[in-house]
Amino acid sequence: MTTIDDVLAEARGRIRRLAPHEALAAVSAGALLVDIRPAAQREIRGGFPDALIIERNVLEWRLDPASDAKLPVAIDHDVEFIIACEEGYTSSLAAASLVELGLHRVTDLAGGHRAWREAGLPVVSVEHDCPPTNQH
Image (cartoon, rainbow, N blue to C red; front, side):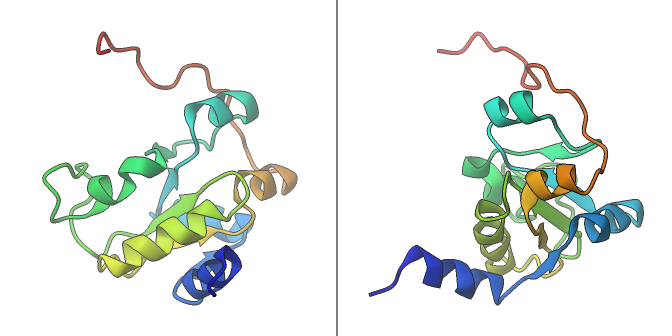
């Protein structure tokens, strides 16, 4: 029987993980940091400076260059994305999913936002970073 620990280990075997300072250096060199945490977590714990906010449930559609719902930054399969969540578990699974789509330069942030904060890296205050809509 397969467990979530097995799935996580397999996913991490397909990606290169970055420590917080490595991720910051990669961002300085042009990588895009993608925060997939829910809005409530970002509001409580703060955000990454200049991160692209894409919640997990739409990630593949927003970053797949072949998707009709892609974001303008999803120009091809060579874009370097660093996926980040709160503790580095969900981001590993998400990054592996993007690798399956051919985004071969996708990595994730080992330890997530928690490790980023503990490393003393900059955190920005976030208040309602998603604009309200009139949709029900």
